[in-house]
Image (cartoon, rainbow, N blue to C red; front, side, top):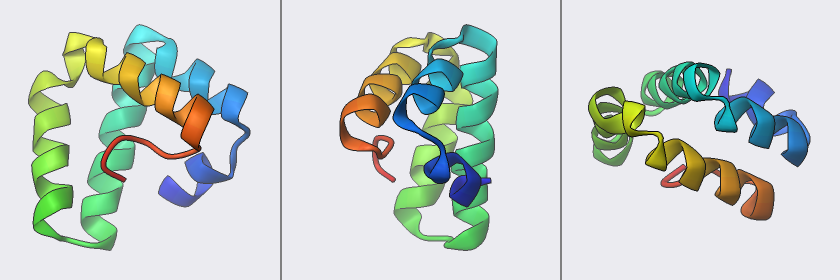
Length: 76
């Protein structure tokens, strides 16, 4: 999932992340897939933060803007 998401254009990433429910689900899948690929402390902490605080929509907006500008998500 992480590879598929990173291969998408910036505008598709932005749209996927800016939609409230879709963005939260995408974030969860991407963050936990990163944990499964590389179980580092950083990935686990970020996945837990997005699991419990990702619904706050602010983190999704930050990631959407970063994906649009930098082509990467926060802490990825």
